Structures are given as structure tokens and as C-alpha cells.
Amino acid sequence: MSTEQSTIPTIFKHLPEFGVIICKTCQFAVVPNQIEQHLKTHHPSYTKKSRVTAQKTIQALPGLVQRKEDIPQPPISQQPFVELAINKDGFKCIFQLGESRGECGFICQAESWMKNHCRQMHEWKSSKTRGGSLKKRTEGRTNEI
Image (cartoon, rainbow, N blue to C red; front, side, top):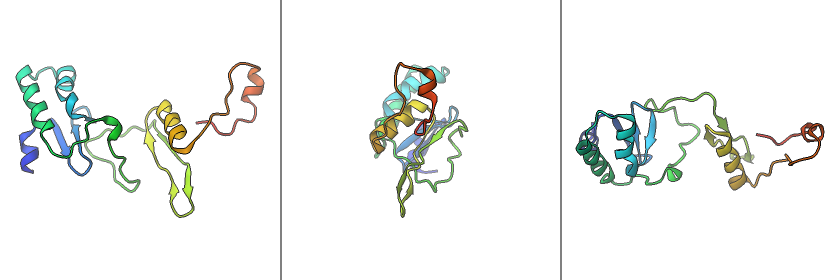
């Protein structure tokens, strides 16, 4: 165990190659400024003093991602992280980036996140329209998520 890892509570795991802190119990990443709130909400046995100490210690680690939006996506070839839960009800972007680059591979759990990703990264527009005949709206849809 590294010196850095030994100074943070055992409930957390530091993954320096991705700049994230993982809560091993809840099995998800926690951004540094949310450590105290995460402990208070999900692990109420931690005292106020220990929560504040944990947050200060973790925030002092170099190279941590500060916003969840900035957490880097691991390469497609990356094996699952043992510290994270595996969700089997997620979405994977299959947009083709080009013959030599293959598919995008972005993975998320919420349909709304996938739609937002496709709009921002691939200029996708839904073929769904509002109003009108339900029969006409459901015929021939091809670009749905």
C-alpha cells in the first residue's frame, strides 16, 4: 500500500492513474469536495471530525479530478475495476469513429446521459417529433437510443 493510500480512510481507494477516489462500500467514485457529505449521508458512523479530516486529507492528494464531469473514461480495453459496481442495464455508444478507430465506446447508465453524449459528441438529433399522429411517429424510426 502506498503512503498516500495509508493516510486516507480504508473505506476509500485512491486510483491515481485516473485521478479518482472510490468508495469501496458504495462502489462508486466520489469527488474530493464531496467526501465529507458522502460520509455523512452514506456512512453515518463517521464523526464530524473524522469526516472533515478525511476530506482535507483526500483534497490534498495531487492530481485528483475535482468535478465528476472531468473523470476520464477508461480505454475500452480496460478490465472492470473490482472496486466499482458492474451495472448490466447501461448504454454503450456504438457510433463509428472511422474505419481504423472503431466505435466510440462511451458507456453510461442513464439514457438521458447517452442522448446528451450523442448530441454533444456526434451531433445526433432524434427523429422523434412532438404532437401529431402516434401511428406516424412510430413508423420507420431508425435513430433511436
